[in-house]
Structure formats: structure tokens, C-alpha cells
Length: 342
Figure 1 (cartoon, rainbow, N blue to C red):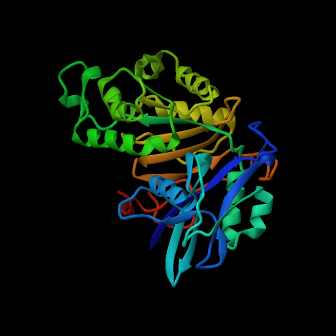
Figure 2: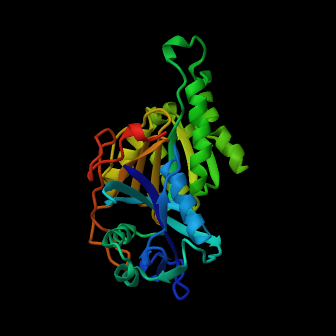
Figure 3: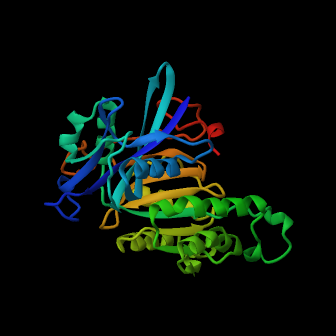
């Protein structure tokens, strides 16, 4: 099995503007002289490379562009010389960079989604474009992480709020610091428990931002008001900048489910294992548009999108239920098998 990852780089069209209307976007597609084809930027993963990091690397290497990762879009599958190959794609809003033609990639072309589809050589790439248009492109990511492993509470004799991460939890914290910067978060917030604070401290240090401790994201606060954290996440999203929030297992599933039910999003899971990530994507008015669940920082579970109209270049949301179960063996309807990811 060949594993690969890539992205759909998109930008506001020169005549459009950041109005939230998808008719105003362009997507970047690349020409490969070796194959004389037009495709979306993608490439094979390095050994033990996380697909999120591989996708960003490949887009940067092939186009010279820097981007902010958005929603997971889809997985396409095909064979290369009889060997199965899968490619995971993410939406990527272009922030800067400059394309330079090379031996591998000869041209970068910017087209509207409708114009790009017939130019793309592989029809499945058109399906990726449709997935991009399933909800408005301009979403804000709120990355809700559960703290890393901290041993067993029954083995800790002190104040439970002071229970620290164990060795596995510290590795999970380092993994957060490696992966989450691809979303370009501007803030890092956390519940007050030591295991929560220490789970995102390496990330805050890497981003060079203040680590904001907020008891609203704790289980104690959730017991007082089960809707409090959901309201806080919506408020953070409407500020328009990606943020990271570290919370606890007694809060996250309830909160994500509450948001999803209110905004008619079908979730890929209803869980929050230690060291997991929920990438929640909100529209400008605070509606949940999509939810990607990473049971471990090593592997994505296919997300789901809002249930509404068919995709179109006008940016109306589209009904699309992505694969739902993390632990199923690999098939076109499930995520990549757990054993293949670091």
C-alpha cells in the first residue's frame, strides 16, 4: 500500500474578496511534465510521517506556497502499477509564497472550482474539489484536545488537579506541538489541571504565545453548566483566528455532540481518548461546519460535514457523510488502519 497526502490550495479570487461566497475563490492545480497531467499537489509520505505534515510539506514543495490547514476533505484510492495507493486531502488556505517551475512541477494554474474540474486529468480530483465546496471554505478551526495520559487516578494520592503527565503523556504533548502548528493557531487555552496545562505547554512555547489557563474548560465547570464550553468555543471561533483548547474526557464528547446536534453535523465518533484531537471548523457566524477526529495524534478519522444541499460553486453546504469508524480495517468506507501510522 502506498500512502500519500496532499491539499487543495485555495485563495480569494482577485475580483472576489473575503466575503464567504465561494464563487470568489480560486484553487491551485499543478502540471507534471513527466506525466503530462494536471493534478492537485500531493506526494508520498516519508517513513513514519503523519499525513497532516506530509500534506503540508508536499503542497509547499510542489507549489512554493505557505498555507493554513483547514478541513480534512476526503481520501481517494487507485492503483499504481498494480499497487493500491491512497491519498488524503485537506483544504489549505494560501497565506503567501511564490511558485517556481521545476523538473517535477512545471506550472501552477489558478482556476475557479468549476473551471478546474474539467482540466484535472484524474476525475477523482474533481471529487476532492466537490468536497472542498461542501461547506464554505472560510472556516475557523477550534482544536479541542484531550490532555495526554497521566497514569491512573487511583494511584495518585494527592490533589487530582495536580496529577502530572506520565511518560506517554509527555510524548503526546510533544506530538501536539509538532502537529497543531499547521493550523496556525493564534491562542492556546487550557483547563487548570496540571495534566491539561502540561499537555499544551510545548505547543504554546513553539508558537511563542501565552498559555491561557481557564477553568471554564474543566469538568468542574461542565458539571455546573453543561453548555458553557460549547458557548465558549463558538465565541472563540467567531473571533476568526484558529485556537487550541485543552480539556478533559468528561467535557469534550458532550460538548462536541451538543454543537453537532444543534448545527446538524454528523459526527465520525463520539469520543475523546487521551491525547486525541477534535478539529472543529466553524463558519463566520459561529455555526459548526465540520468535525475531524484524530483518536491519536497519529491518524485521522474521516470527518463529516453539514447535511444540506448539493455542492456548488456558490458555496452552499452539501450533504456528505464521510467514513465513520476509526478502528475498521481499511476500505473505501473507513479510515486508514491504525497499525500503519506512527
